Length: 346
Ligand code: F1P
Image 1 (spheres, rainbow, N blue to C red):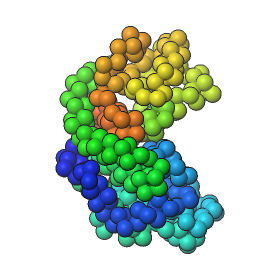
Image 2 (cartoon, protein in one colour):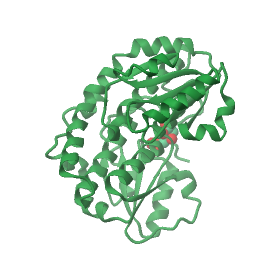
Image 3 (cartoon, helix red, strand yellow):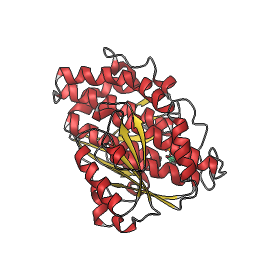
Image 4 (tube, rainbow, N blue to C red):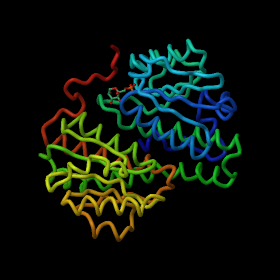
């Protein structure tokens, strides 16, 4: 991941990294609504983008499972932009969603990894993620690369619209450059993650909770665990727990919290208390230097302090590693999980 990102981001020419999209950034900034379509991990990257476009560029965003969107009769209006996200560029549901949106007159942007893929060819403009081939079936570095491209799109749209200050614009671009080094630091905590994985190798269920930009990361953490270890896992917004999932919490339920020091920190701390009061076993992803949460939970994994808008790029890494080690310890083939195809073309 670090390799695929290193050297690509420069504060002065970030928009140049957006490939074919760079001539369309004014249209993006001018759009009244963005509809994002994708499946699986790509859909989760779209959810991260929803927070970014809304917060930074104040553009209304809807994120749709392509597999559902394609069978509806969605309302697409003039100046709507549809962004299709796909690692393989061959996912049939996403391709069908594009064709449907096109038939209604939408302008289609693509965020794909595979150059010349069917989805890339079906779009009006796009940016390639250039993450290199995903060796396994389950998307990992593709997620980070997709979120990076979508972050750049949101930052550039916001700058053009004037919804962020010039200072924040530059700060975000400069901070984006620090992400590869932060990802490398998380990778260095692999031994600790392996020890936690060992303890939970035979868990039957997992819950993942996060707030704000870490909510889609919770969904992605749960999906990775399902895909490669075959453990039942669910992700929820932490605030949604009290509306149902809290009934599942007992001493046999591992709960992974995305609990980084950002604007929802205090609320996440109280969610952790609610889970601990019901004897749930908590693994918390925390910001380096946090001294409170380690006193409350069973296990912590530290990640470097990151600008809140960029946190998913770093906070997803320990979840990918946790799934990886649990799956390996269960003897699963992490590259070829059962029942999954690299490109779902039907
Ligand atoms: C979408 C996806 C992946 C998942 C698996 C099946 O693929 O759901 O997220 O990990 O490979 O397909 P894509 O459209 O991003 O290639």
